[in-house]
Image 1: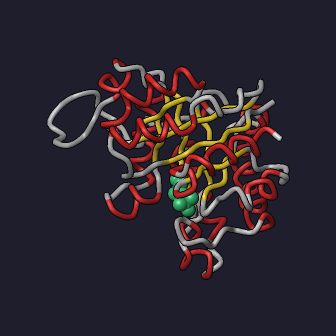
Image 2: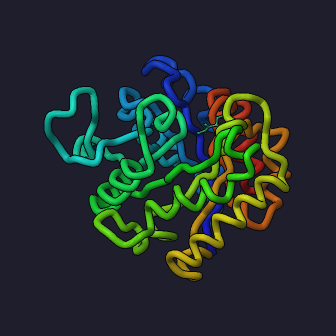
Amino acid sequence: MRRKIFAGNWKMNYTVKETREFFSAIEGKIPAAKSGCEFQLYVPALSLTIALDLGKKSGITIGAQNVHWETKGAFTGEVSGPMVKEIGVNQVLVGHSERRQHFGETNTTVAKRCSSLLKQGFNVLVCIGETRAEREAGKTNTVLRQQLMALFHEGEHHCGSYLGKSLHVAYEPVWAIGTGLTATPEQAEEAHQEIRTVLTKSVSEEASKATSILYGGSVTPANFAELLKCENIDGGLVGGASLKPQDWLALAQILQS
Ligand code: 13P
């Protein structure tokens, strides 16, 4: 069956020193990951080395927040797959809405990134989700479908063969990110159901059933358990609360209870 995942996304927070402090605060208190459960943490590129070292001891999978689709070349400011692979990274977050909003990421570049990284052997968590305006205009399902179809229509960047194996999905409604406005379990489940239906239709039922779909958007220890009760919610992608050691530990505990 599909894995349950608690993934933290630190975004552009914590220096190397603060990363060390975070790990010493949770050291010895992390629940052992039960079979079928996984803890992931996406940290800034400069903290990858130290987090990999400290995360290894604690069984946390450390991931990069963004990696270029080309393996080298004239892309000032970017990091490549081979660069992060060499230091031990196997997991990458792709298509976060902040990349889409602030850095010109489109469905096409998300697909390019995903297919290149999957071919390079990385595990990828791809983010999708609608804005408030899109939800209010009744376009949520259309937007989700378009974001997914970019990954699964036939062509150069087709990612279908990786789905449910090294490719999993995070649903993050943009209006719920960092706003304290969590989607209700009903709203989240409805979107997750739609995502699973699209995955079944565009890839296969087997791959769709094996895909972990994480919910993200103002997840805290106070609402995580309710969200996890939904049939199609397989975990959480957590920003703000994943920066606080006590909340991080509580979320890890809730995932497995
Ligand atoms: P918050 O949990 O801070 O709302 O952030 C969600 C998110 O964007 C995780 O990737």
